[in-house]
Image (cartoon, rainbow, N blue to C red; front, top):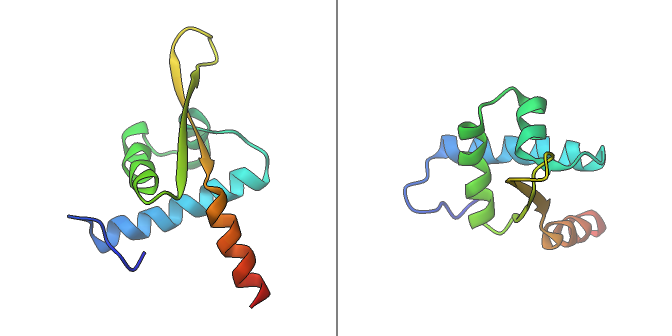
Length: 95
């Protein structure tokens, strides 16, 4: 987070840290990281979530996959925490 993206504010970075905390909580609870589940967990709007999530994708912290929605007709966004984040956390724990 020491390297802000172009036009990124400190408030935006703080939102990203908060969003990662929520996503990790959902991850350890084995809850799929979909927009609908994140909306349900946080009470935020889809637009608010997209704003934070898109920044995390740009930073390669999250990986986005397009899947079929629960109705099987449209598309939904499914997110995964990038494996390199877990590698960094493991190195941090060993230090």
